[in-house]
Length: 190
Image 1 (tube, rainbow, N blue to C red):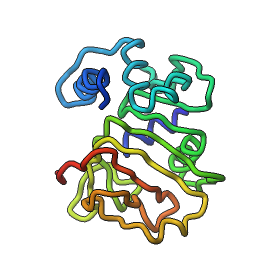
Image 2 (spheres, rainbow, N blue to C red; image 1 turned 135 degrees about the vertical axis):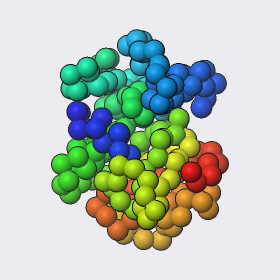
Image 3 (tube, rainbow, N blue to C red; image 1 turned 180 degrees about the horizontal axis):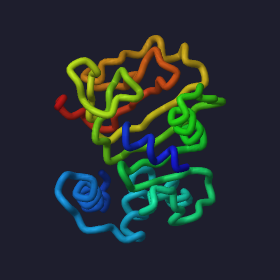
């Protein structure tokens, strides 16, 4: 799980809007008040559908850099508030561990992850880029769903251009390729 939180450092629904503002303040450049565990749980659970998030394990990065369980789950999903709010199924949790270890992901079925607050940005071509460059096709995604497939050939027909408004493949041609499905209009490139 520790590696999963590290992965997301590189890579709004009603009541979720104030939580998003609170989340953005927390991860932004300006100093923000420290979130309580209850606030972290609210932000984490707002990253995915309520029926999934209510039974998810909630994880957080402790002061010592180790993963801390804030709430034990019952459904196999894991959500976190920081550094970017998301909810991941077991396939995505396995994928993240492989990514952190630079090993081949072992995807045995369809994987789904939710980032309903969007993200801070990632390269669309380099799975290990940590910042925008002139050549790494940096994209900041609004609210979206991410999909893994156990058959990478299914990705061949999908585009990599996120500006078309529909699903696209991030990191196409790598062992970490996955489908990005926007749930709102994509923001302009920054």
